Image (cartoon, rainbow, N blue to C red):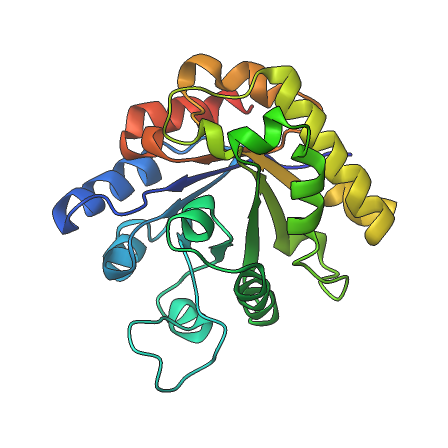
Length: 248
């Protein structure tokens, strides 16, 4: 199955406005053909970044969204608001939302469903902690987190799974090529059982967790690795673009 690689940069709580604009412009100027490239700046710079990538194929993403459409939810951002400034994809269930901000599985599920129902591409993040990997619970954790999705999400082009082993995020320690492929293959097999084989074959599964230009080609060459959700390396245009080029 021919799946277009998707390399997305999660800027997290980084950059100020001028730097965000400069970074977005640099990525838009040199993004390679044949790879889908996206950036997810902080909420406050989404509008500025949207303007900076006008005319390019780079997709604008958001790091989170709330599940309600409007109302008295101080500090939250709705899917409609994100669409209004040009957002095309949204993350749900990032490990930092789960484990730093203590989002429950139910909350992650509601957010994921709102993102998909709102017409945007959902990037649903799954992955285990180090102690869970060491105890042999990786597949159990990933299966439970995939259960936050619903088979009503029937468009495989708007569902992206990002496997991000928590022990590899921002630590400089990444999964080996074989470890990444093993979990990606499990995810695809699970999707085939829960949805169907055609859906599973067409869904893209990204690897997230200390992907850098130095290790990107090996990871991206695995048969079930369809891109990357890039953290630290996405804050430097040259490094991020090198990872995107490695996906070709």
